[in-house]
Image (cartoon, rainbow, N blue to C red; front, side, top):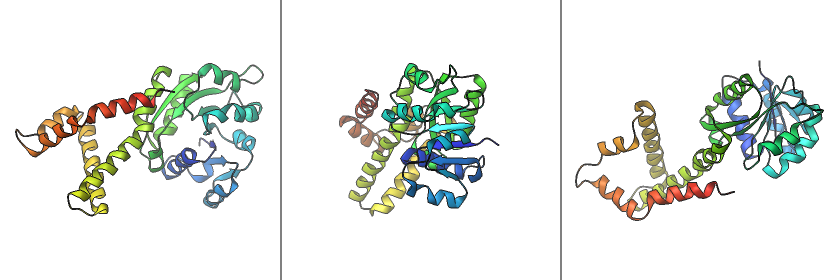
Length: 263
């Protein structure tokens, strides 16, 4: 069984841990975690997760080592753990945006050797097994890349992308989950204005989004083809769509995505 180490169990690291624990692929005994704030560790220790306050101990433990810290902390944590990583056995996955492969190679190399290293970007839906995750190879073999894909697939879907596409993937899926939540909030507020209580309106919106996603996933259709099915001439739907476009709906979405990758 593959053993996983997660260094950093903040919002994203914690979501990853929850997702792996929920999956059928890993049990608590397959996972170790480390975090400077030890109060976050106790509940997981009770579930059987191996917990450490020392990042070096967690780094030694796993076959796949996830470094889930803020981008500006990656270098210092790598200085802390690089000498205990086994380049022959372990795969390193850095969950952070805005870093360059050249930078990372210089940080992970120790005594002239580098472990197989990847950038990864899941989204917080990984906590419920529904992430859209992206990985980009920094160095390593096809076999190591497939191993990382398999691990993330245990809690959602995974796509391997070129380095130039990593920012776009972040905008569409990692930032994108916040944009989807903002639509839910806006539609819920609209539902309240139309006469539903807030909780009922939210439930309606969530089920509608779920249905729309499943229709597209199952059929493989273009979204416009499904839109055409419910936009009868002179009907309610086309009037609503046109009003949204008048207010800049499509352009607002595109501009939001564009601005997400300006770092």
